[in-house]
Image 1 (cartoon, rainbow, N blue to C red):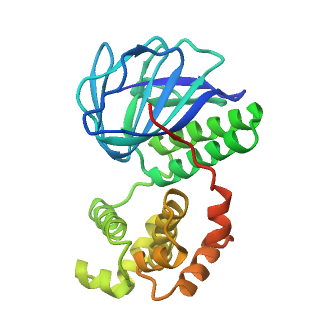
Image 2: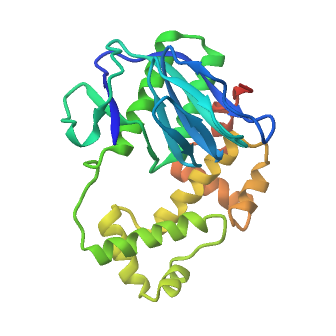
Length: 283
């Protein structure tokens, strides 16, 4: 796998950013030569995009980073949506390196050309905050730092050394299975006892295992996943607070609002207002 290195002792320079939604199922990306870096964050469907060396299929929850002087073009109809970010770097050699040979240096980061995000929802919220800043302030300095923070978050999500703790393989697999189960069922009412029954383990053992590996209780992780889903719905849809609460399996909107403020220190309405100015591009 190859990637690109960046010196971030000074912020990267944002060129432009936005969200793209394909206007029709047969849409294909334009044929052009990039003048800067472009980051894709896939949110729906598949993006079929190629360069001179490889054809890429970008799935939901994945990212792709293309370098300057790359010829990019669509090679198949793409019914999809994604966030995109163009930026330049002070040391813009755009020469790729092997990820396996990269040695971490202070003030530098390395981002693989393509991969899966551990927390796509977090990156999406940051992209929305950047778009809100572009729309509201038109301040290049602020926008450059926000863009750099997005790239750095991506770097940390791709860094195998981040929170890398060796665990017993069987326990780690069980932990991952539980985490995946919660993510898939976060729009349903979830209880620790229900999860324990599903996996055939004692509830206290699962809670202990989960907190040992993740550093948080199983109950807290369930709430965290629901609030992350709520954050996306608040900023990317026009659903009411009550509709979102019902969709996430809360018994009423009051319980949802209490949980949301407990996790974020903001009410759902305040959170929505902070990211209200979305940019929607048809490219």
